[in-house]
Amino acid sequence: MMRFNASAFARAALAAVALAATLSAHSEEKLNYDGPVITLRFSHFAPENHPMSKAVGAKWFEMVEKESGGKIKIKAYYSGTLHSAKDGFKATVNDITDVTPAYVNYQPGSFHLLHVLDLPFAFPSAAVAAKVAEDLYPKYFKKEYESMGVVISNINANGSYNVFSKKPILKLEDMKGLKVRSSGGESSDILKALGAVPVSVPVTDAYNAFQRGVVDGVALYNTGAVGYRVDELASDMTELGMNNPSNAWAFNKKTWDGLPPEVKRFMYRMQRRLSMMYGIEFDHQDIVSRKKFEARGMKIHTLSPEELARWKKAVEPLWEKFITENEAAGRPARALVTDLRALVKKYEGWTPEQFMKDVEAHPVPGMVSGM
Image: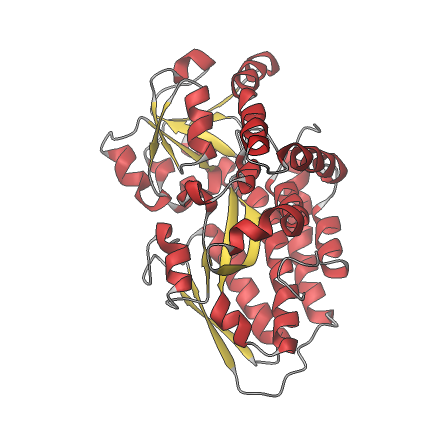
């Protein structure tokens, strides 16, 4: 797998942000709809001042309103004001919200094939993870996600997960017995395989758990550590790129079904753009956040190739476990893993500009029926 070049990506990501604005200004997908204004409720457990809320969410809301000629507006509710992080599916089904994060990791027992996106060291970047996830969704993931009573809004991926701690973690043995905050699901299995004791804690509660000693460390992406203030408590960070947990967002099925066909087509394309904007910006913001850590004096530990290979070897059995268990239940896990790895190889060298141009010209079809 190609090594991710952080500095080069940071420069390219800035250009991609500008490209997204240019594409928005010249989009041929302006909405042809003359009905009343449609206001969609968007809810998120993150605060409004989270770096990703400002860098992507707010910009996308503006794009939707501008390109729809003011016919579609997004009313945003942040900081869990409508529902908790774990209740995304429930809130969508019960018509509390129209669009919200509804993460696989928060209800791991309800999913099977979707867990492949959270397996260790699957992707070199969040941008690649977001692109691969959308490509695979219609064939492999749609049925089990829609079984939750929703349709997909978009699916992106977090920045790469590292371990934030109050003491150096320099080798695999340092993880043994360490209580580490996990988002659950495959992330917990990864930590177990590394010798740690995973403690499932919603990201909104990570700071308190770390501060009170409920956990000894926090597995999180860099920008999440800033957004949820974990970096204020950590003296050390071990840079792993452990995984890029998927971020699936649900769309209220009742609301979606009630939209006029032309509005559905418009929103479908806009949501494909959103997935890629998030993937690119997660990578970019993680680089920005890392620089903040260094400026603050946090000790950042990068493992040698030989030591990192030991960590990868420790978690490699999780891939075969995923395949074996799903195949035994009649699910095409081996074909899925083969397709995933082929797509990673295809996209790992793409630039942010390539990703943005591709999603505009060739949005993945079939993520929602009829689209």
